[in-house]
Structures are given as structure tokens and as C-alpha cells.
Image (cartoon, rainbow, N blue to C red; front, side, top):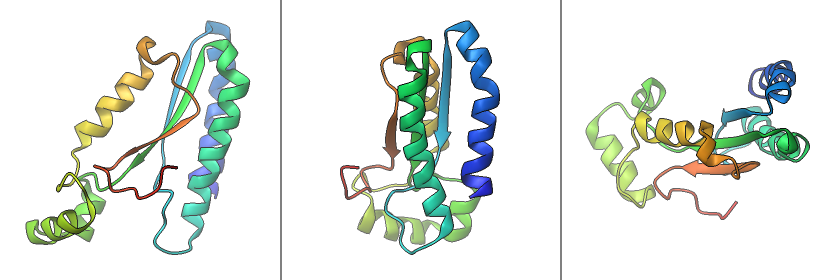
Length: 140
């Protein structure tokens, strides 16, 4: 909870007054899936970020501040490469679990984050957006 929720919340609240002064701010939290495969505290903390972000959006939207959460699916990273160390393991998982049939690239997550930070995304706030190639099975 400390790492995945409290520190994120503390940082946001430390920066929020300056965003209020500017009447502009963009916050993008990189969280995790809403469909944890097992019970663990990290999933609970990330769900807390989702709920807290929604509340923050309702309080700070009037100041031109948006806050959104991105839920990465299987995005290529060191952690993912450790879990799926070879092309065959990635292909097998992707064929069974990811509708687009492949793992995502970091740039695909970054592209959405950059858009959400732009003035073009001023009406998008309080959302949780999966970036997972369709892997999520639930609507929320």
C-alpha cells in the first residue's frame, strides 16, 4: 500500500496546489489490472488508486486538472521478459489470452499517456483505460 498507493497520493497532493494556481494539470497513473489472478496487496493498492483518482477528478476538474489511470497489459519490459523469456512463451500466451495476438510495445502505452497530458484531452478525466490488446474480460 505504501509503494503503490500512499506515495502516489502524497506526490499528487504535493503538486496539486501549483496545478490549481495554473488552472491546468495532467496526472497519469500507471496502475495494473482490475482482474488479479490471485489475492495480493498490490492489486488492492492499485484498485485504491483507481477509486482515489476518480474522487480526485471530481474535486479538481474545476481547476483544469485531469487525472487518469492506465492499466498496462502485457507490455514488453524487463519484468515481462523475465516472465516470458523467449518468443515461444510470448506467442503461446498471446495466442491464448490477447485478442490482438501479440504483446504491446512501450511506445503504445506512451502514446496514450502523451495524448492524455495534452490540451486535447481536457474532457477525459477520472478514467481507467486498459492498454492490453483486448485482454481484459470485463467492462470495468
